[in-house]
Image (cartoon, rainbow, N blue to C red; front, side, top):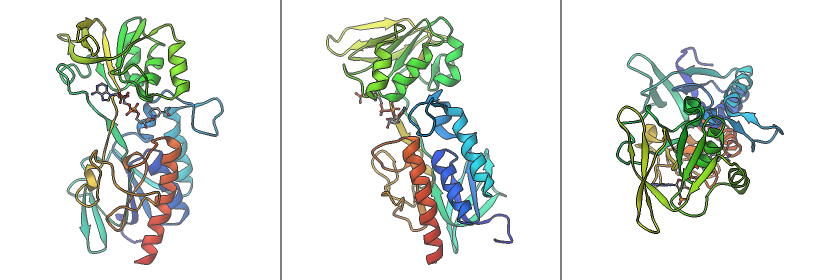
Length: 311
Ligand code: NAP
């Protein structure tokens, strides 16, 4: 154990399932390790109402419960967690890396585990940015309850769009799911639930052109891709789920990323930069789930341990 409280074997960045699992394994390997998180622990999954496909919870588990459970388990073995760390910067140092969390908050480490996940992609249409927080949202769990008995639009056809549309039916009078094709990308079981829900109406083969309204959303202008006809769908809120983008900016100068910013690393989480490991959604991978994120977290911690032993 180092004498300096800011000297670590491993710094983990990101407190979602991948980062917290890396912390659990690193702590159990008796590495001196700290996890940095910019907000609450739990990551993206914390904004999901119910997680039905994480094994071990036969009745499902609330997304918001996963982070605290993982945290309690990792802390039992001594993981240190520092929350609300924003504006991080990484530099190389003689002994590995320096992570700065502000001018007078410098951490030294031999190895870094990047588990920063991914964030929502904006649509980039007029009105979206202006009305963000005034009816435009990327988080149904956070904002859904503001729209009791109102009509809403969800944009997208993946798991996020369809699951969040289902969640919104708890509050809304009606939810339009606007999708650019006539087939969903979401898992079949999620599709079946949505098709059976009388409050959901699919608007197939349409794209959103503009979100309109003065102080709040009044509707979304959409175009039928088959007929080219445009119309205004009057809704009080627009929830956007058109995919994710990698949150890899912190280490973009050190590691190779793909064309969408995902860090290039295999199942061993080893990146192009010795000492930096990538775990969870931020890594190039075919399936982004809690189950695949925790696998990465465990692997990254053990690979970091081997790396440090080899120094
Ligand atoms: P996604 O799977 O990438 O789906 C994005 C959706 O948005 C697609 O239907 C896409 O249409 C549409 N889209 C993309 N750009 C668009 C644009 N400019 N205009 C209109 N529509 C656009 O993203 P996601 O649903 O957020 O899921 C991300 C990852 O998390 C996936 O791997 C997903 O499986 C996973 N996830 C899993 C669960 C679960 O297992 N319960 C829940 C949530 C998320 P096209 O279909 O035409 O491409």
